[in-house]
Amino acid sequence: MQSHIYTTEEVLKSLGYPDPLVAARQQARMILLGRLSRYEAALRQLKTQWDCSLDELRARYQVKGSEDSPADDAYIEWQWYADASETVKAQLNAISES
Image (cartoon, rainbow, N blue to C red; front, side, top):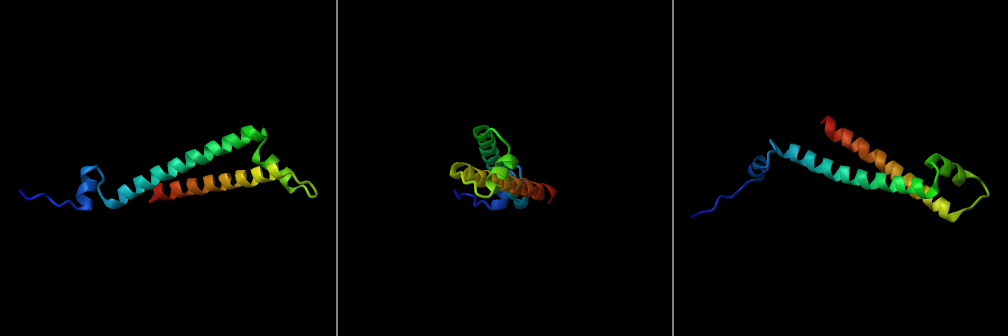
């Protein structure tokens, strides 16, 4: 008995995806939602840890002559997560609109 050789398209159709691009979008969406969840959890943790907003910590960071290494490091990390979160949201919008 000869076994059937499957194509990518056949496998994806059997999983309910009408074409490979739909499958790719769904996979990208799942990856991006996972990242967004991690980034937002980190943002909540930083807000709780520092008991202030990112803007308030930024103001402390920008004061000349005032150095607070833990706060400065936290600000840089917090800003990175905020930027990364916005990037992921924009990417999610892009794949949703296509």
